[in-house]
Length: 473
Image (cartoon, rainbow, N blue to C red):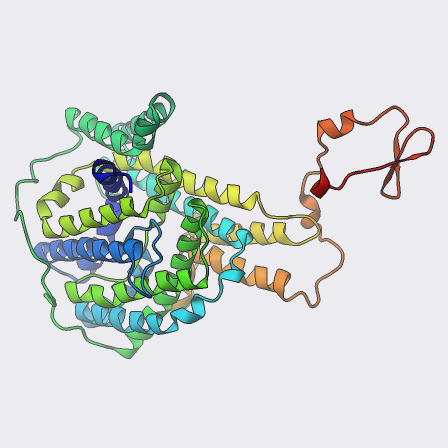
């Protein structure tokens, strides 16, 4: 517990970091379903409210629900394409019904997922964390350019300069500030960047007073959910992907905060994810999942308290009940978010690289596992249309670089490190790719005439020099 004001400041920082992401899904799905502007607004407030409730459940926990780790929950991006397809056939009611039914099935099968922690060594978690950071970089770039690709000023020099200025403010505060300022560097940079944008006429607060000040979430506002078998099956594939991504996020944040994540804790986190997804459609929201960008915020600030994130959940609930607060935060320009996002998302990738540095690459195939998994995960980022001609279920699973790399890393780790039958006793060319290095202090201990023979060290007289094993050094 860091105290009320610290919790509020750091919690608000979490909300500002993920606000653009949490409102993007209801915006996209609502527009695709042909909803009115007011109904899309209700989708957004419902998603904020549901995300806040899910965050409280995940961070504070109940018996059998919640991993009690600093994870911010919100609407998952994984199901956007599937929900748009479902809405074209059955409307928003079919989308909500498919989410409820598929999430309920996901809740039932969570015990299976919770028992696979031994298949997530640093090799796998490092790959996934690195890919999460790399996958999020296009989001930061999109924000830095203006957020809306159809806007006339998208990618303009002022937008990019504003993003660069925000990035510079983050770095400057991190370098020159004290511990408190350094940890709040993201929030302070967002505030300063927004003020600069307002002075330059690049943001508009005139819409803040327009609309209701307070609004309760409406239950089944869009009608009762309808349940279509094909829609449920396609959404269940999304749920499988969500379970994989949530497992990776839970393990990633566990690595960052340096706490043990066993099968029971993972299961509690997945159950919280699924029960939140079952209940969210009642208020008009969709599947809930941990937000990867907030994992990066935990890493970069070093604020590991779950109560800070729980405070962020309270802010989300308030935003769902007080639309005026949402309109204030919505006025933060996208380029400002983009400048901060470069640091945030890059930190996630750096955390993954740090985890991968702990992996043993000697006399095994771990290097090729890392190379193949990260490369496979980058395909959807480098070529977004790569899977366009494949069946929709293939696109649903592999359109996310996170799920692509996670699945590849899990499969290859099983194939090479668990099912060892058939493994060659000779290293492949990939395993030999590691650079050979010798420490200077080891060379400095050698004397004139010393030589190695059959793995032993001898002096100039041919006498064996005893060597100490690293464990006894």
